[in-house]
Amino acid sequence: MASKTKDQKPHHIAIIMDGNGRWAKQRLLPRYAGHKAGVETVRRVIKFCSENDIKALTLFAFSSENWRRPKQEVSLLMDLFMTALQREIDTLHKNNVCLRIIGNKKAFSEKLQKLIADAEEQTKNNSGINLVIAANYGGHWDIVEATKRLAARVEQGQLQSSDINESLLATEISLADLPEPDLFIRTGGEKRVSNFLLWQLAYTELYFTDTLWPDFDKATFTKALESFATRQRRFGRTADQVEQENA
Image 1: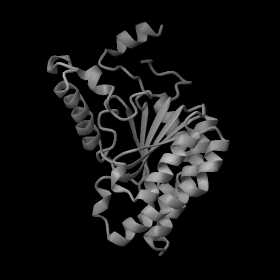
Image 2: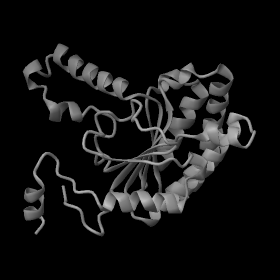
Image 3: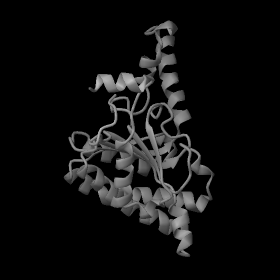
Image 4: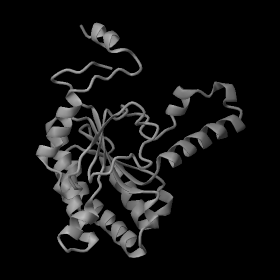
């Protein structure tokens, strides 16, 4: 909880990678081409974060609402997800990246579920950047699942309902072991959080850019970091209180 400083950097960045389809359409290409180009951007952003000593990066790859898209596109996205996992996992491991996938993985094929489990197992002890991929994820789902787990403990006599508070619920939410995102970035020009990390984004600084995800480069990333560095993070306090605390 620090006031703005020239050197202020986020520890955890969360990104909605929007604009792949529009990027492809502008080039008279199929939407799938935009998603493939987006994978290349993911590589670049992981590198940017490592270079800037960012501890955690969470990327919204596929929302629980994305199943409503055309079946062919969803099928191609699932294939791309599997291909990317198979192709990238050894490189991520070599670069000390700790990978995890959050979301309702039960909806995926058994093959994809095994690939996810194997990738997480391979990288779980790595001490570099925490790379989180949100796939078939929704903020509402996350909170409901956390609530169910607490309700089960009440039913089993391990908890009283009166024991449940904000802090306890937070321990059951996805990414409870990581610092909450300091900076949220959404590419593609839309200005909403779209059911992404609703609990975790409560005090996150929001940054929106018109840049389409495949075009998200180091210059755009730097602008987001520079914007974050100008923010005074008060967490309910007054500006005077924050300035006095950091004097």
